Picture (tube, rainbow, N blue to C red):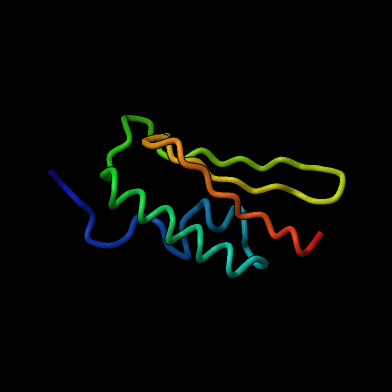
Length: 85
């Protein structure tokens, strides 16, 4: 079975750029570590169309809640910087 030699998610990956292009450096690092941990734990393959991770951005009246969920184990990480609200 093929396994990529480098982590699938890094500083230049699309989800990282999409969510935290300039702000949230700690959240970006946590997200990359968390996603690579789940790929190592559950394998990198996630079906023909992907779907391993679910990205949730919920706007509220005081800020945006950022969450990412793993489709293999249903664990969710909250990456919101509530201190900035």
